[in-house]
Structures are given as C-alpha cells and as structure tokens.
Image 1 (cartoon, helix red, strand yellow):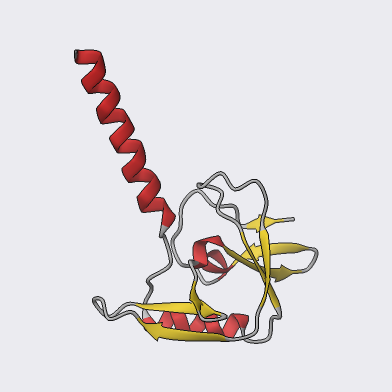
Image 2 (tube, one colour; image 1 turned 180 degrees about the vertical axis):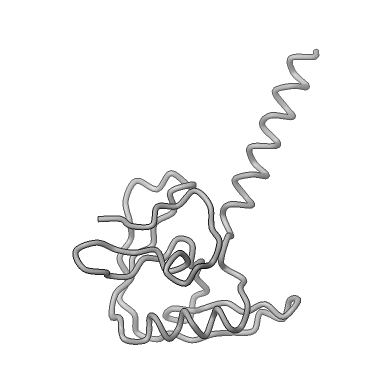
Length: 118
C-alpha cells in the first residue's frame, strides 16, 4: 500500500511539473510582448520546439501576421502568430546558421529549453 501511494505521489508531481513547464512564457508582460513582436517583426519564419515535451523535431511556420493580445488575466499579454497564441519559451528565430530561442534572446526566464537548435 505504501508503494502505491508513493507511486501516485510521484506520478502526480511529474504531471504538475510537466504542466508548469508547458506554459513558461505564453502569458507575459505587455512590455515583453512588444519586445517579442519587435524582434519577430522582420522575420518570415519561426520554429516551434518543446524540449520538455520531448518533441522529436521542430515545426517550421511561416509568419503571415504577428500581434499582441491582452489575455484579460492579471495584466498579462500573449504574442500571436497567424492568430494563434504562442509560448516564447518554445519559439525559435533564425540567427545565423542556427535558430535562437526567443524568450532567452529577450532575457525572459525559462527552464529546460535549449538556447539554440539547428
């Protein structure tokens, strides 16, 4: 019985941790959203890659539109690409021959994500 409770506690903790890491920089300050839009404004393509989610590969997306939106929650904003809210922790932009993490480039604190991907 003790072993079952221990496993349940461990599994629950893992789920909570995964959920917390899933949305690291989706809801951000208006200032950070404006900075992200300024950074991405002249970029035509981004890649989405979630290392904590165990993504096998990055997904490349062409930017047709980019904007910021008040999410009506405690003053937070989100950045939207092509009308969809994104998480800057898992968004990469071209930087030379590699792709750089948007959140890290803007000095937004994130965890367990690489700064660069190929």
